[in-house]
Image 1 (cartoon, rainbow, N blue to C red):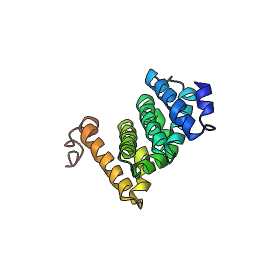
Image 2: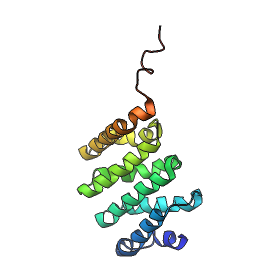
Image 3: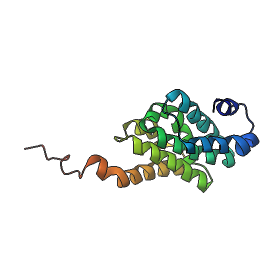
Image 4: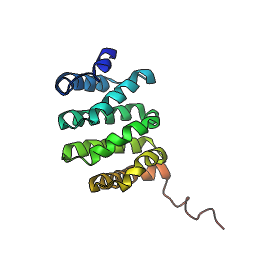
Length: 166
């Protein structure tokens, strides 16, 4: 795994597309180790690939990033400062598939950030983004996550609003 991660930053676009990304995807599909020192370089490689302007590199990189977040869960939240810009860029991409992959990363982040606090702290800045696609993607991601996880995470809401007041 170390050789794969070490080769990523110095590789050209064709190498990433043909060799490194499929290998990285297979590595993530097999399951990441619990040790942060081992999965963090995979997260950084996927962020690096997701920032590529070619959708043949950014799309699989975003899909790998989504899977990494899904596997490491809330342990990925401290790295949102690195992840947020590529998710926002993906949400604003002209290719529908890239936008959908970025949306998948956003939903994965929101799913592990039960109070949405950390995610909104980093992604909230993009609510004023000049691209309507980025703004719409963020709002859709938040709405989708609230709709899917809201009731199970927050309860019915009756015990939270005005119930404790005399």
